Image (cartoon, rainbow, N blue to C red; front, side, top):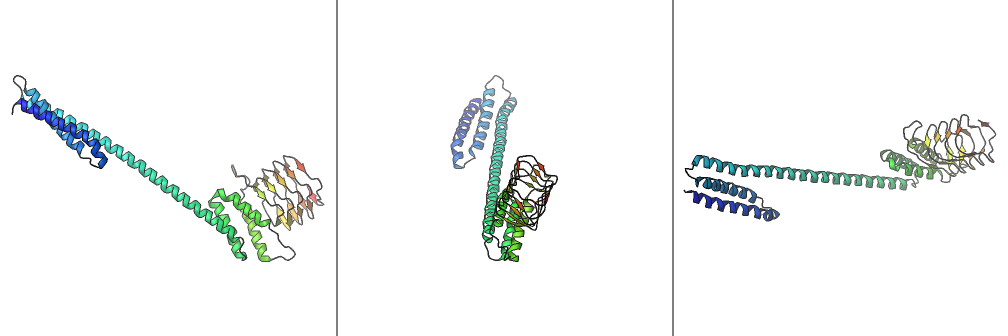
Length: 306
């Protein structure tokens, strides 16, 4: 075969290979990915024939050297294809990883959404059960709310609001129902347990609205409280808040203590309003740190330890 045939065959294969590469862009949209390989083979064969034929046109050509040079040209095309193929695989793998990461993020978001939905349903159901006539059901509802607040801290203030609201409900002390009393004691313990202990680093700030509440053996000693509202509250037997830290204002306006109030060593960071507070038993305020405005106008505290 003379050199002209090599050159013509090489040019034909080279054109066909380039055409295959051009068509591969459109074929890829239909899922056909074989054309780049076909184009590579044709271009490599075309370069082999073209380079070999061109070198054979010279005087006293060395056929072995011509074939070697043509082979190198063809091999370079194959090497470039291999590099492209590896880069393509890398891109595909990166895209797959991105898609997988997105899928996992979506699954996590869906799982979080499902957990939040379940938590919301638990909360709604527990609040609904607080209206159940059976005392043991109401106790269980309060424990469920406490558990929800522990597993979902952003529910804590809401659960505290619900517990305070329950304690603000009217309570007939002249005809005490011992079962209802146990429910109310449980509501008090929920509040006590959910408040952060004094000394906690960067504690959350929770507010308590116990306006007009009926409290007995209420104990928030050594706890950290935001705003504490005890306006018109009625305190019976023994109630304790000793060693606590009040970050917000405290309102005892019009409250009545029918027993002992242990309030020593309390830190009042803001207002401490005891206007109109009436005590029928001892009130211990020794060691209190009043850092804000304080009022005792109209207070009646016959046994005042301070």
